Length: 115
Image (cartoon, rainbow, N blue to C red; front, side):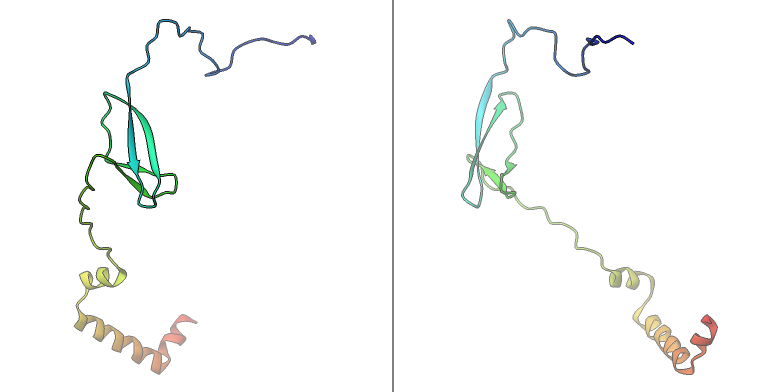
């Protein structure tokens, strides 16, 4: 094998186009204020839709300086296992089922069946 280096280009390494004559998009600086007292300034295009909220470096949601806080959407309450059980059975059915299972435990039939 040859001892020389192979030359080539990497995928995504560098563009071969020159930047002469290219004008960058016009920008605006948008300020956001965090509830923890931080101010975040983000450069954005003039054509971009500027969001009302931006994530601060501390993880809190920062509000754009020239807007009011957006209204919170009412979310659905979390469905618990108990809620899902009540969709399938009534309280009366659950009481009957509980009595049957307790009777099996007391008579020890349940233990004999599983062995």
